[in-house]
Image 1 (cartoon, rainbow, N blue to C red):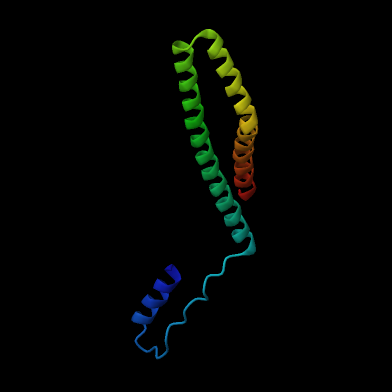
Image 2 (image 1 turned 60 degrees about the vertical axis):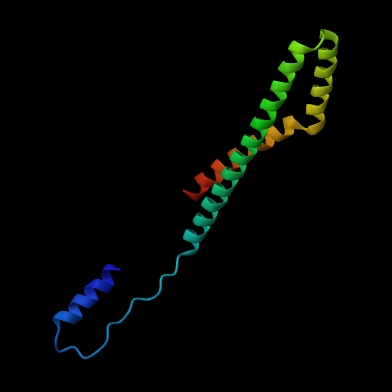
Length: 118
């Protein structure tokens, strides 16, 4: 941009000039710059996915804990323990531990891609 302004000023000051200003070549990013931008964009996408997954799981676990507390205080102990075992089996069946591991891996991968882009 500054080169273009310098050229315009030179043409305005030179009254004998009969030509037109030569425009600079169009900008073409280097391959390295493209790769860095791709890494950073992928890192950003993975970070947003990790945040969305984290919010989803946090809300789900909060609802799970709230229902657990409700049944603990308003159910007989035997029924509460049976429900607690069913809930734990449900958590294992849904693969909550794998989801948490995937969330952590996504964050680590995102940080790794960002650092590679530096």
